[in-house]
Image (cartoon, rainbow, N blue to C red):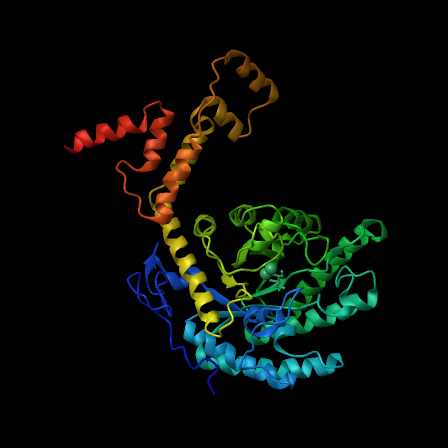
Length: 473
Ligand code: XLS
Ligand code: CA
Ligand code: CA
């Protein structure tokens, strides 16, 4: 049985190729900064947006689904089996090494916890044998503790202890599945962990309960010998008005407050970053600065629409800056680039699933290579070094960095230093030169960062260029 008869194995053909079913930028074997692109990117397909929900088939709050898929069946377990096999055919054809799923994406709940576990076990067995056959791995699994009506007011922050216990049973099973399938990570995303109305909410009790829930998960993972990385996925809102895991900084504060910080890293989603009024690169930088960069959910939102549209990432500037932060952070470790993205409602062909993933992978490959070039040329490093040079190169700056400065010593110095000058960042010039790395090739000699440095030294870029071309002559 084939689910995608019209599409063969997607290969790298380069920018000259006009074949829509080929990579034009993503060459998995290309070595960049000492590793292959496949090793850097660790791409993953999100089961839910590709195979599972009606939302993945075009359904939205105003309209029915617009697509029908060959794995659909009136028998929910039969559909679960078909999807499982379709997943591996899709990943093999794309050449993607990882997938990710929620428990509810892969098997129907049935009428009891026992029935649900039986259903899950059957599909997990298919996953296991298909993983062995293909070498495809599980980037992460997670528990959907937000769709069922019982979770109307949250799971680990529900005001109802019975619901809390049910959520615990679900995550317990999720961890067993993670162990069984060797999941590299286990994700917690709390879509309903938050509140609609603060005055009917015991905020402190809910935060304490959430921390206890995480501790129970850590203890259980240790008990069963599951050693994958735990990840929390921040999101500020939607479906809940206010979600507790608002953004990276909020989650870090929560984890540190409850002594959980050594056990968790972040799963960061681009669309969640923008919902929190941050950029994706901001969230990556904050996580990395706490040594908590875990994995990425690659997508993009639509700033005009304003909710979690989960589009495939095609914004090359945003992706390049995200890749820049990934490289600066030392890579993704056990994480990867998971396409938590769905085809648009009007992309109705089955083949659009391939075209959309190819678009995301090519965008990331192109962004990553541009970021590598920015790093190789020390484009931002030199700018940053120059910008902070008073801390590194002046006596007073050094006392601030080494912690010997006091208010008294700084005030004494400030009084004697009346020549303080504002130094321009030349931000517009910086950004337009950065664009060359992203959209074409940096062409200038000397390098743009050197020109910016010289601008700071009050030599105009034009003078410097003139000087260099004279030297060249
Ligand atoms: C929803 C989230 C969800 C998580 C996993 O907005 O992105 O899909 O990634 O539960
Ligand atoms: Ca996500
Ligand atoms: Ca999302």
